[in-house]
Length: 257
Image 1 (cartoon, rainbow, N blue to C red):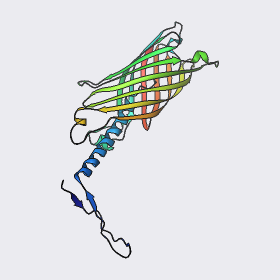
Image 2: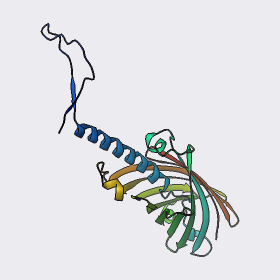
Image 3: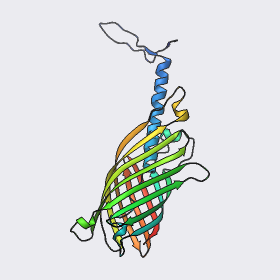
Image 4: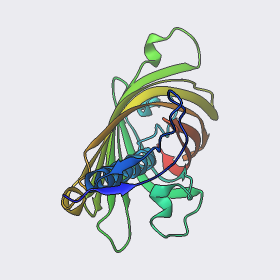
């Protein structure tokens, strides 16, 4: 293999009174390794952003859906989640797209509650004219009946979400959260703390050729502060969340009974 010699600097080094020229040897393997490292870093950064965008945020107050007059409940709503990004970052700038600083993730969410404080939810996003799809599932268990304080509610939840349909790229999330909130008649504030593990898996062209990307897994802490507003059968939900270093703002409009 032919070795490429490049003089990056020439400096006088006074070592025992002798001036020496500093040279650096660069091989094709060095250049390929650098390209590999740059590509992997951009893949990891893109995965961090997108995994936050598809994270199944709580988007609900702390009490159970089955806490009403009858021991069952149902909710259907549309959401608009905005992920804060840096469009000048390399992993976005290289796409040559005019991206906003808030990347939208519209969603449809359906939730149902059954006796014993159990809730289940499904979330979906389908991009028009493409195979890109986001799905999410969650199960929650309300703890309010174990808290001897009026208007105070809490729950624990497990959630999963995934992004599929992107060429040679798939992301999966799974995590837990613990929520505490106030069950007031109209406005129900809440806060949730948890973790999410994200796995980004490259395939196809991303794992063939001179530059081969590796699967990327990261574990992040999540925090959410929000409030649910109930107006008869209609609900409005507002949230501000962090997923690791990423920020997500969500608004939801729907109805429940």
